[in-house]
Length: 508
Image 1 (cartoon, one colour):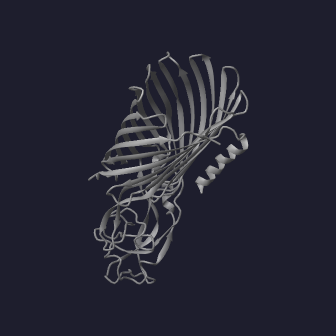
Image 2 (tube, rainbow, N blue to C red; image 1 turned 90 degrees about the vertical axis):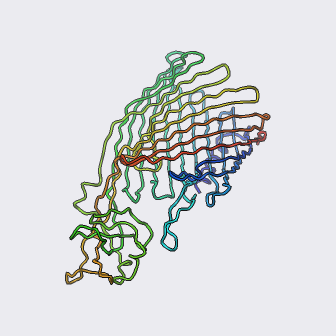
Image 3 (tube, rainbow, N blue to C red; image 1 turned 135 degrees about the horizontal axis):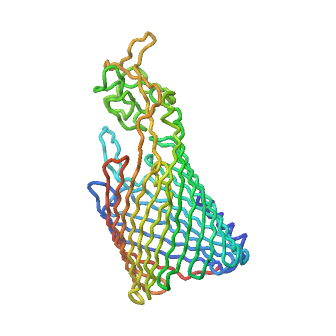
């Protein structure tokens, strides 16, 4: 549905703002054959496999007109040779365009839609109650981004830009958190001389995170102001940069009431006089929370021995519990933090090639984890034509993602279950029953950290104006941890040979 609306929006722009002139359609195909050393992105016991990828390419464009645009759609069909359950299709749709009203005013837009499958190992419980690890591509990650802006020439040397943007991240896996963000920015730039431009921009961003199994909804507001410059040092060197302070304000919402199983049998190993057990959302064996042993809490998943005869209805009898009034101070937190954003790039041009290096520090959607997040990235790229037919390129990237605010978790506290006469309730096995009491704070994830390193080597052989062979080798490493725990990491090597063919553009 979202995809159809986006295509309708683009069609509306093209049909209403422009004349039927110089529109181009271009088709192409990209076929890839390669291998991956860790197709399921596992920390231990990686599995290698071969992969075949087929990517049709559709481009719509109108260059060199008052209204110019470029729209591209690439569905990506991937098939693995031996690993079952992870074949499928990913989608990429992106576009950009501008409309020049006159010599002073220009309207522009940029948009992206990305839907990818999260391929991984997934643990499930089979029919006998035993844990089983299977290959899975059921989880998906979906991103939508749209920016619309206005650029105006204020004088021969000064121009200003105002823009608004919206982005949304949706996940089908419970460990990731859906979120959406709105932003607005105003920027002014002034040409001091032909080789030196200075600027000032200010922006505000608002992001809301949905509730998850370990956190309540939260809301972030980020205010930022940057000074910027663009300095052409010489014909070969160019330096660009922007930076300034940023304030991050986070508000967490109190957890909503929760409907859970009312009773659970107490467990061995609990402190004397303190009821503890396992509690699951009805029906049994669906959503399960982490276990906390030795605490007066009802948490975790039922085992085959617990899902048995007991007090009639103790598995199906439900209770709605709300936040314990004594726990209010642990929730609804409002935090403030002061940080900074930076964006620097250095470009070196050679007689034939090009080298770039950049550092970016900015607000991020959190990659599906938690509340406000800062993303630091360092990258470098080198491109060079070896001859008329051969091109080579190298690319390296390092990112460090860290959460700014805390995640608040909740659980269900327990009390001893008694009948109307005050006598303890037991199941048929004689086990004392615990009864759900209220929601309480259990833990705070103070920080999430993730590091990603990537290196790519690419070699291109041009066969003609419309076709080329490509060989690329990619090394990928990812490390992450919660609250100072031990790092969990995995790496993967991908090698691919591809053939790309694009047909000549067809003018509508």
